Amino acid sequence: MQEQMAQADRLASIGQLSSGVAHEINNPLGVILGYTQLMLRSEPSESERFKDLKTSEKHVRHCKSIVEDLLNFARRSEPKKEKVDIHKTIEEVLGFIGQNIGSSRIDFQTDFDRSIPPVVVDDKKIKQVLINLLMNARHAVGTRGTIRVSTARRAAEGQLEIQVTDDGYGIEEKHLKHIFDPFFTTKPTGEGTGLGLSVSYGIVKKHGGEIRVKSKPGEGSTFTVVLPAREKNAGEIE
Figure 1 (cartoon, helix red, strand yellow):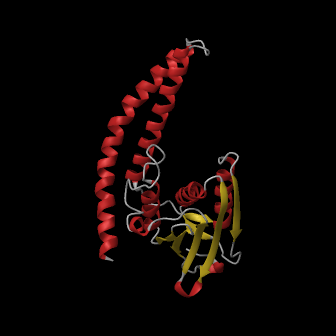
Figure 2 (tube, one colour):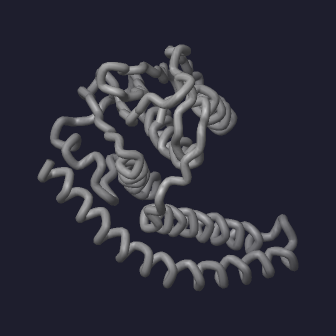
Figure 3 (cartoon, helix red, strand yellow):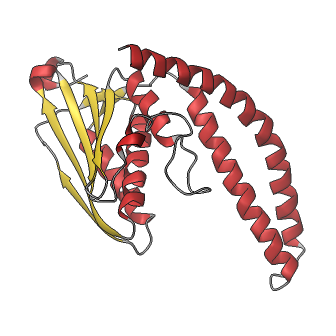
């Protein structure tokens, strides 16, 4: 419990700092991007200058995506909950991921407990958590592997469980205790901000749930999201 409170305090402090920094950086980046695109319009597409400008545009967009991650991390807004079919939410995210992995030979598998009734969550934020977990799994397996998403209803505990499992390279034990820390990443420089899991941690906590990981190098990883599932009328879960 103490460790969780300390983690929450760290996230809050870094969130405030991130918000200020992100806003200060975002405006000049917008100006740079605007002028770059303006110059591209008047430059022949076969010229070296055009190629240089496209490179600049690419890197500015990358910077803006990092800033967007910072802003998402800092916002920490209260969930806007609604009744959703959790399996439909997962399937929509899997469809999105499938369209954005290129030619990778990744086998996506599902094992759903179809007895789970509708749940009351913030659909957009839960999708954000799932996208983060699935993109991490996709990075872990590389161009070939298996990613499995499963659900289970833990009626006795009044909880709903979502698991994302991959057979990728796994996570070293020394990294596991830092896995939800802001800006922590094992990806190469330029391939991640280290905010995805921190944002996911915050979202799940705002829902009154928990997120944990089990992993061994060479054996893959399993991320488990546990959400409260309080029985309501007509079999509904909240």
